[in-house]
Amino acid sequence: MINSSDAAPPSRLPHDKVSDKRLFSSLVNMDSPEAVHDEILQILSLISSDFAAEPEPLRRVFSFVTDLYRGRMEEYQACNTDYHDLRHITDTYLAMARLLHGAHLSGEKFSNSDIILGLTGSLMHDTGLIQESSDTEGTGAKYTQDHVRLSMDFVERHADILQLDGQEVKDLGDMILCTDLPTDIPAINFSSQTIELLGKMLATADLIAQMADHTYLEKLLFLFHEFREGEVGNFKNEIDFLHHSLDFFKDSEERFTETLDNTRRFMLPHFKARWGIDKNLYVLSIENQRKFLEKIIADKDTSIYRELKRGNIVEQVRKKFGDTGLKK
Image 1: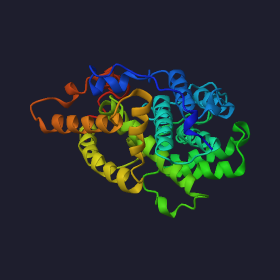
Image 2: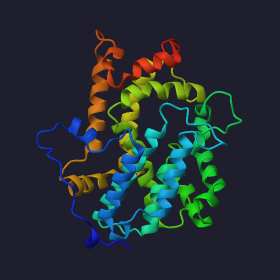
Image 3: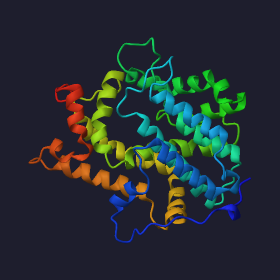
């Protein structure tokens, strides 16, 4: 079991003069999977001295997933979904590591193998959206409705390469299933309370990582087009989808607090111990996103597209999809 006495001293950031918005994005270079992985290794060292060296199982799955998404495997295409991309995977990976650290500080007991399994789930949870090389029709977005089950199948299919035993495959499948919004989590036959907790933490990491991204609102335009190809929902156009996203903020709040047992609370002790910040930056960022979306939707005199300025994402959407998202 991990031992809090093994934790290394936290790094500190001169955050008192930095806004919450800038601070959240400045802690780690989120555009670099390798930088995210390095931060996770640092977080693991805060949990236990057993993680002083990079765990081989984690190195193996991280290399496998980054190669997969970058198109370095002959049997698979590179990731071609703009919302559920490698950045989303590494965002979830980091969020899961932060939750694990915070849970540890809060008195939850995980073995080292539990921690590696939880992080493996975060890296593998959307692999069902990756197309095989022979699948040349459309993009991986066409699998949106079935991608959770496909991700579970993907883990099982590659268990030998990832050196996962049968119980680990089963537990990973149950954890990944928790990320499926329609799934009745209490009906899942978890092997233990620990796996159930890890599953709820993974579902939290998956959702909170998306919604706290400072370009989340812009990226929703990409998500609209993924949903359109995957025949998810009945949204008239991009603006209609943004309007419906306000309801999603409300639904997500209930999911976080009730369905997922408010496991997002583990972020606070992490930020306090790792960075000396006594705030849950994910919750603050999500609230800022919600308020801004409400504002731009309510302002009838301002173009929503002109307000969605971050990352040149609107321009990328127009270049890729033309005006298809503007039509009913």
